[in-house]
Amino acid sequence: MTTLRSVKGMKDYLPKEVPAYRRIEEAFARVMQRSGFREMRTPIVEPTALFVRAIGEVTDVVEKEMYSFQHHDEALTLRPEGTAGVVRAYLQNNLGNDEPVTKVFYQGAMFRAERTQRGRYRQFHQLGAEVFGDPSPAADADLLATLVVFLREIGVSSPEVILGSIGGKATRAAFRESLVDFLTPKLETMSEESKRRILTNPLRILDSKHPGDRAACEGAPSILDVLDADDQTHFDALRRYLDALAVPYRVDRGLVRGLDYYSRTLFEIKGATEKLGAGDTLLGGGRYDGLVEELGGRATPAIGFAAGLERLVIATEENVAPPRIDVFVASLGEGAVARALALSNELRSHGISVECDGRGASIKAQLRRANAVDARFAIVLGDREVSDGVAELKDLAARTAAPFPLAEMAAAAKAGLLRPPADADQAVSS
Ligand code: AMP
Image (cartoon, rainbow, N blue to C red):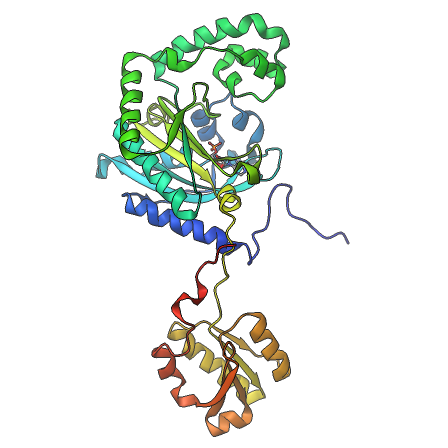
């Protein structure tokens, strides 16, 4: 029989890898909460129509990358990103009624049928956040400053914000015209897809990786040159705030992003190119002032971002020590196993992590395991120890052993005597 393998582009996160992921997830929750965001969770499966309306029909994600399926009479899709679901949930649960400004963050699996490479998978995880109800450039600056703090806190040493603006509706309409005028004479050399998109969604062509499209876009007008007065005021104020906050950024005159819902502020943060190669964008986001209304709500300004968790792990590449086992209980004999199980659970109730070996293997084999799981202490229990009420307590780090009355174990655990020193299970840098 052939053995089954995971779906292409969907990887396993093994016990030795997970601490690095958890470290970043926990830092993210901590930093976002410190900036006034609260966590929310939305379903992994949503109606296909939600993504088509939110992300845009003529985008790579919707045209090529979604895992969509029919279930009875419902057209459903595994979420390719988080914002659409959060906006749907914001509207469905009237979150905007409680507070004029709603700030949420989320973490979870996303699915895109992309060509896989290092840092690009078909199931990946995003850490993201959204701010609803605040149109001010101060909200943009505050979010970016928070992101830079987060990245520094997890060990991305020099995060640089790449900043752009895609303008509001009026700016985009004007830009679209000048872009079409610029690209039309070069249609011959462009990809079939872009020939089609020049009619349906010309801005997407700026995003294309096709060499012909890239050449055609060389020297294309920048939307930054045609921002209308309000968009320009917003952009200038954001830059002033970022300067005042000493957030490192550079303006990219050609920045466009792959989803249609953005307006005004756009940003990306790249990092660790040497480890990530071409896919070195750690996070991306921007303002989407029209999306809430587009999805049926009242006009509500909003801004958000999403970071790729796998890329953050590769970029920071920290060797995070797995959580240690405090006590390993080795036991031999029917009565001893029963007593070992009870003792283990008692110690655990005092917050001690305990591995209890009831396999019936030799004590030598059990102690080999105690070393393999990096336990600090081992307690050896045989039937004689149970009847005497005294077990052997081994300090595996100090390589010492001493008899220890079973009746005093719980009190010792409570007093913290069966714990490694506080700094022993901290992350260690590679
Ligand atoms: P996007 O939602 O396309 O703006 O992407 C936001 C971030 O999610 C990117 O900067 C990446 O870090 C991450 N990301 C997007 N697609 C993938 C993927 N297929 N695999 C891993 N990370 C991804």
